[in-house]
Image (tube, rainbow, N blue to C red; front, side, top):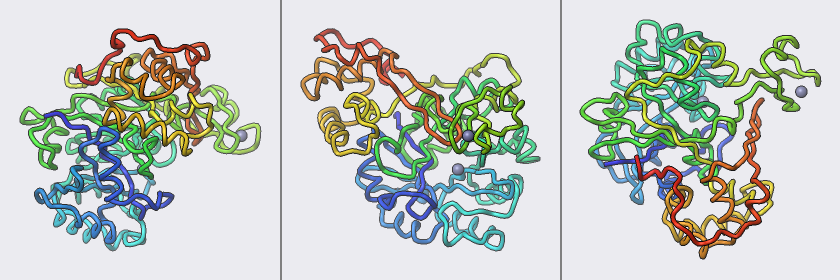
Length: 409
Ligand SMILES: [Zn+2]
Ligand SMILES: [Zn+2]
């Protein structure tokens, strides 16, 4: 069977997260985005563990509420500020790992994403000891990522590099970016939202589709390891330009710079603040290939723009966090079941009667790849613009749009 999984989120016990990040809210919001499985995030945190334990137990490492499956995951920050993602087979593995880092972390009980005074190799050893998977989170971002501090996987994970089976691409990169780095070719690419809120513009804005026999931890583990016929079959995510760190830009006034300009200015903006190196430029530095070469196992990558962002633009609103946007989003989800169906699969002849013409036209512009993306950088998300003539057009009834459908994969 095919499942859609978003395997990186944070609970309300991590810094700068929404109070609405509860297991109950997530279990309801996930299917509306088209998601079958979420990784819990923050599973080292006691209060969050108690909340996970209110789910039905499917097996040692798989939990369920309202039809949404959960597997145990956590993100930790190491002593170089590198973020690592961990996936655990059971609560006993979580407890054993927690015990082994207890004396190395000051905020293990207070922060859902703890800092651990150990390096990547040491963390990988402890993960392996409890049979957990470990790999770099948002691998190319400039503040807290493996490639911000290390030139290679081996520099981070040393002798345990062969134990690393996945890399999370992060919002500002995609498969074409990452497959210019040869050492990543053997790894499975994960696309996850890293969401701090259950709002549909954040949750599952990136996810991975896997072929598995059942939606359980052990089956997903096999899919990440690509064994037993299980495998990732599709990566889905934002266009990389929409990410917060796509281009090099000032962290204060968000002026963008080319790599040459930034170097010439010694990474100092004309406003006096720091320029942060974008993911595009960082990958340009560490790439070992001029153009991406995809290994045979690499699945296709589909770029998605969150529906509520498209609706906000169509309505001329500055943010997707308004009642007007939510109302239009709800109407479409009620009619078509999930956001993925609306964005990619539903027939326009069926969409048009459910919503207003400007929104139908904006969805069509997305499917026709006519949405213009203004790149993000310096910590500011990229933004989208709709082609103005398209948003004024009424969509005539016609055959189903032929843009690649997710059902084709
Ligand atoms: Zn992180
Ligand atoms: Zn500046």
